[in-house]
Length: 233
Image (cartoon, rainbow, N blue to C red; front, side, top):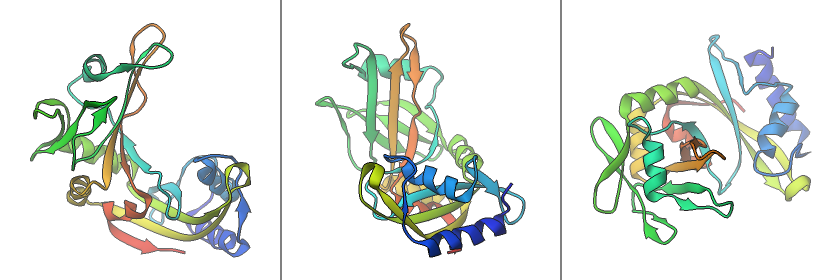
């Protein structure tokens, strides 16, 4: 297994080597390419103090968002209720609910008023235009999800040029991020920087399928979720 210090050395070599063609077309190409160049199969690595570090990469100035973690809302089985009440039929004839929610506004779902976000002392809730809370996450659950998924993060940024299978990356910046700051996380939700993606569908037998309700952030704001930031490349 690649040790942390060796990993940083390899990153610097990758930077010196300049542009490299993507190993996979599409949004996930940057992560696949970096992992291949580093020779790692899993997306976590030993940290400086034997703690595991999550590896994430992003194109500089990318408009797409990064998923911090996924967690279904409460109470139990509320996904089925959300799907029944707010879902719509896809082209395949299955009930679907795909929507992105921002704190600063009530969104729309197929032209109808959808959800907004309300923040209380002990929870973050999804609310309707009338202020009805229809689902929630308690703060302690969100804190645990983040800290389990991202106790430390090695965040590698790359310049990008070209498109599709001809896209190229120059990995030239890396940060070691740690010390998740939940207060800052909530503030980023309030500022509309962290968004909530609801992704609920149906299996062929009609059962509810949670595709992963995610808390997502714009790549250039990711470091604001952490209290300790160290540039390592």
